[in-house]
Length: 244
Picture (spheres, rainbow, N blue to C red):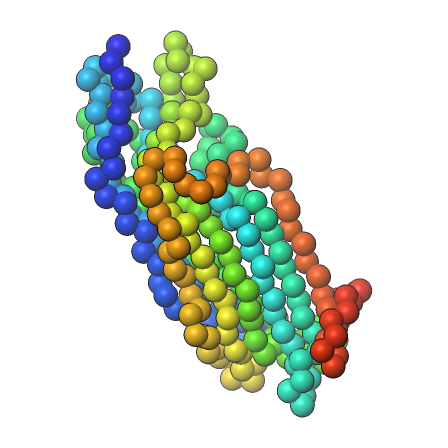
């Protein structure tokens, strides 16, 4: 039986280089960015058999997320900071479950009748915070921080014939893109509006073919998040428990 090959004809990640501000029920400001992926992959299968075992789609890893939301008092002095950090986290994929691939619509099956596959996907990373701290002493005034992602276009063997069952879940990396989101912005809680800072939004930092990405995807789904509140005073930052 001949071997199957995958040829990338198009791989076009497209970031939106600005932030969107969504007033969520007059309770919190959600600061969003947007990334779209569009690809075309041609599959060559001389025997027209193996192609039926594969699908084309994307997996993604959030390598680092560091976000902060700042709260000021009535005089405009920053008094609280909410900090969120996360590392090496699969983002919207369930690749360790070989029967399911998480992001609905993020994969397309290859068949003997269709071997030119279009694969599209999108992501909307977000940050932000409540307009008021729980104790009502602080109002959301600004947001900072970044998320760093890598997204891979891959072929995945999800439906192997019985003779090939050991290969279920086999991945072939076709293309990749490293990208990041900068959430720097100022918030007016009274008007419930935001103003993006210079350079804020999504941008591509590097991209390439096959498995040449500078990092490997995380597939274990072990949550590595940390949330912390701080009190700010005269340049000092002190951890606050419980949440203010």
